Amino acid sequence: MMVFNWTQPIRVIFARMASGKTTFANKYDNVANIGHSEHKYLDYDRSLSEKNKGKFTQINPNFERDFFAVFESEYNRGNLIVINVEKFALDYLTERGIDFMFAYRDSWESIADLSRRRGNSDEFIEKKKKTYNDKMELMKNYDCVNLPIPDGKFLEDVLFEYEQNNKVNKNEQ
Image (tube, rainbow, N blue to C red):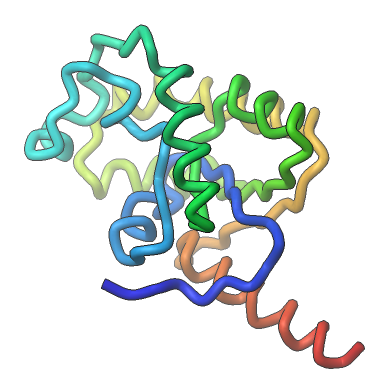
């Protein structure tokens, strides 16, 4: 595996569905995707995940406690952390003064299209539309760097561009 070259002080990125969180985290040794289905659901099985998207139902009653333990471990190791938008996680970081970014697709249609291509049902996608709107509204309550993900790009692409643009800006100072 590889290491993602990230020199920015912000090491936590909240990102929405169809942003490329899992692919990004699976590609790099220093990127952790926490709060993902494997932590949230007791009946999660990675080998069945693509086939059964949206069908996991047994929520881990210790999800928040487990999340904090995994977060602290990954953060203390110096990893870049990607997280699905969860209010308890946003509050946890805010209370501790930990800065974060929000990476998102601002077009529901592009998310729906990507979700269909991944094999998600229309019923699942329609349920997620309300969640998408609710989470976008929630993020307006937090002070963070906003990082839109344009059509045709994914989380890794926009983080790479952000890193490169900020390196250029730092060198010009």
